[in-house]
Amino acid sequence: MSSKRKITVAYGDGIGPEIMTATLNILEAAGAQLEYDVIEIGEQVYLKGVSSGMEPKAFESLRETKVFLKAPITTPQGGGFKSLNVTTRTSFGLFANVRPCKSYSPFIQTHFPKTDMVIIRENEEDLYAGIEHRQTQEVVQSLKLISQPGSEKIIRYAFEYAKKYGRKKVTCMTKDNIMKLADGLFHRTFDEIAKEYPDIKTDHKIIDIGTALIADRPEIFDVIVTLNLYGDIISDVAAQVTGSVGLGGSANVGEEVAMFEAIHGSAPDITGMGIANPSGLLNGAIMMLVHIGQPEVAEKIANAWMKTLEDGIHTGDIYQEGLSSKKVGTAEFAEAVIARLGQSPANMIPAAFDKEDTTPMNTKLKARTPEKKELIGVDVFVAWDEDGRDPNVLGEKLRAANASGLQLQLITNRGVKVFPAGMKETFCTDHWRCRFQTADQAVISPAQILDLLKQISDLGIEFIQTANLYSFEGKRAYSLAQGE
Image (tube, rainbow, N blue to C red):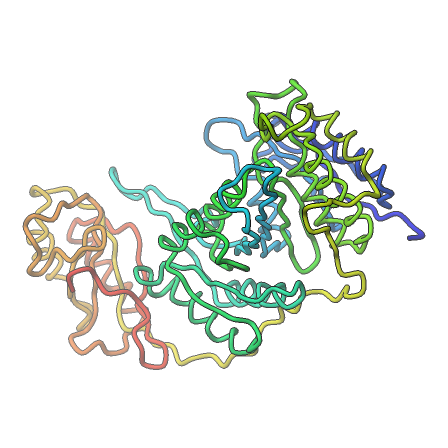
């Protein structure tokens, strides 16, 4: 390695500076060819009035280096502060979150010593888009956005990862028994792409039973690919069942930029005590070294780290009486790893990273022919809190609106049909979805919708949102109401 690779480094908040210092000391002792552009992020930046927690010059650093080694940060309490992680992921297109979850038994206590899975999580969309609105006195809306390109990229990445690292099976997890359109799109895309990888086994789990199986039989999983929120939850479950969330590293990978970090937070309760475990950030840094083409150094560090665990040199969070030989703090743990550089574990499988294949993952999107799209109705959401919230009263009022045959067909409240012929026991809030279509669900025009909204307003009813109803290639592309 003839020249040093420049990376962006952020020491973060809480225990961040302690574990970053320990990690960088290990990297330098192992011979990593790196130079650092240090940026400030997190709490102090938020308190300067920067809502993203990251100043423009920090974004410029990432544009230049394209590699970010980040310690945990603290987001101040209160409104108005955006998630720095989400901002970084979406701004730089870091669509893939990769979290290896492996057991290091018996040196790290776990009930599941054979666990060795990788969770690959979509990283840019879903509920983490953070699009929310308070629409009535009682109801807040949060939009779940799932796209075809976003699903295709992350699923293809998961199969490419499995192929590159010799993994045998990819499991998709969704909740498409309930969210038939959003999660259904992800599942259908998975089934489509799986056909391109006939040598890799596949299966699908509904997310609730999938999470239960991770907690009870994690050894049955190899690579898991899932949506953003589900992936965030199950990766912490998986890390915990392997022994400790504090050991987990994470990669956030895009087409150009990548960010590497620990999966735990800033732990303000132990800040400055010198007892934090740097292993999570160190494992993130090992993933970074492989990513930038320094796999030999990554191997050296990973094997020294495992040898340290085998020798019983443990920080307090993983210390076990009768197994650990010495309880150490952050700096002393790093020194123990450095002292073992060049050694390999005797009982665990030594790390071995591919030194030949530096080909980027193939996440090229397939060309798709646009489907015929037709506007066949509109859902008008209204705020209404009159007449004891009797949906029959609201329904009869709205039946007076008629825009060239575009008329009220049904009303739902929190997704449940309440008009016509609703159940009197259904509890109703002040937030109503009112579906308007022609009697034969014929194609309508935007002008009819505008006319309809004026009529609704003239009736003294407040509309707060509309959602157009479409068909694609003649197939309904919106959900039915519960009870419809």
